[in-house]
Length: 272
Image (cartoon, rainbow, N blue to C red; front, top):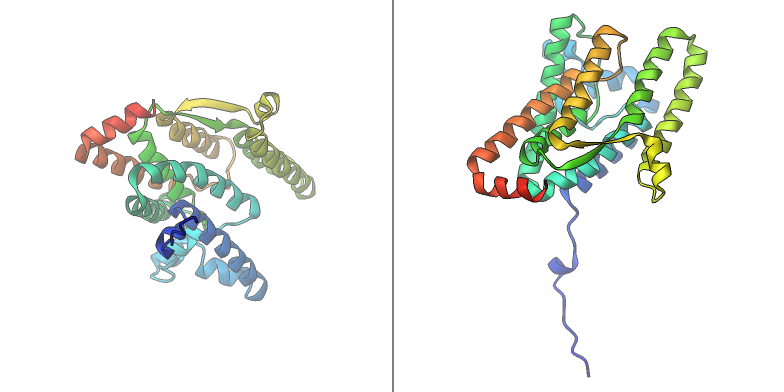
């Protein structure tokens, strides 16, 4: 007769990673905001959920520094951010643990929002709202760039190129034409992202993957877009929020290296 071992509820129940929990929260919030847009209208959502520098500076809607981190403007927007969060977040969470991961994510998102407000003051644009988790995600990326600088990662260059082409098309063509072009570009971006996960090496090349060391990834992800935004054509991307989040991640990664030199050195060597 075989023995029957009783498994306690705690052992039976496997806890979701914090990265997965954040992705679920963002997806649920996206659905909730979509309902609010239909029921209460765009103005209500922009004033109470999105981060608008003018409203925050006037003392109104201070909570939007947090709510804007979980709001996304489109299905592609949330897909791109959650896709990035899944890979970057899963990697960092295993290295630093849930607690540190949570604070890096939240503080990076908050500081990213503050940088966006400061940029609005500097460039005289305090009425443009911002949404998205990318400031927080860049914080995670900054921490990885310090902790595992020589880990090899892939930047999917194809979608970045298409985003720039989309912005340029809106300057060159009428709205009707650029809207069609934008739809085609969105479909191509989805195809590129999924092609990267294909087992077919020829198909993977379609997304133009560029292998980089981790320390170089945030530079490539920010600098070209900043230059294009400032000198060629405005992009619908909150570069200032990205920079703010990145600064937090870099600083915290440096702090961990100073506090735990042996552990962080071992981790860095392991992921060369």
